[in-house]
Length: 334
Image (cartoon, rainbow, N blue to C red):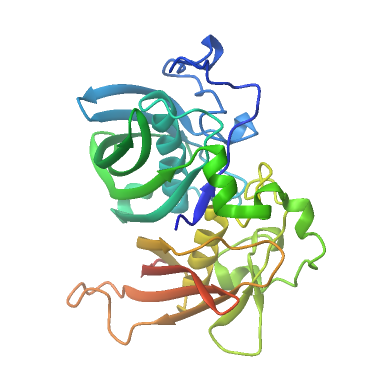
């Protein structure tokens, strides 16, 4: 079962019915921002991509620009040498995967795309923000592509992410594509729901932002419980980034952020998630509680690394069933 959805774009960005796209939806040149419908972001300011091109028969290069300060994926309140938030990498991968599904694989814009697994390993020193926007290139290749006729059903994308000619990260993303009718069958009546349907659940009290590496209460996605290492997922459907557009369940980026915050809460000091692997088991519904648990490994993630890194196991459950399982390697930073 597919698990974490990237919802369809706005209806004014349409497939032309012949395998092509309307002229206004063609890729933008380098130095501008790619059409925000392809990144499935309602706010153009949240689109990170700037260009794309074919590289090989089964590969592409996608360019992106990371802002020096972002209201959610890293705050401008810290020092200039504060590193970029690694989840900015996942958001960039998310947008690149959607862009290529539409432009390279001709997936219609109204077809939901769902995550199954995502993983990255990064070079910590390459995350330096340096007080200026950062240009990155994602070299993307397709693997295990499954089609039904001409229609893409699923694929694995492998990423080699580079900055200034040097490696920043390697990553993989497994995803599936569904026609609207298939998605309605998968989701049943939930496919008609929006974040407004979850407002019957009270907005929970957040844990202290500093506990989870955040500056503002609004960006905290965990709520305290009476059990150590256990939290309840805090769902704020008015959050301008995590709920940028209507969805019928908790977004994948919210679930990844919960795992990242839980790993930080379980590890002393300030840490950087230098590696992460997330498996999505099922959708997290908006109308029922989700529970988050984190525990650290008894030994460092890599014996002999000597830098204090710790492996954190995170699980998210709803109705007693797994929603997400994550392994995060956390590196202490000054």
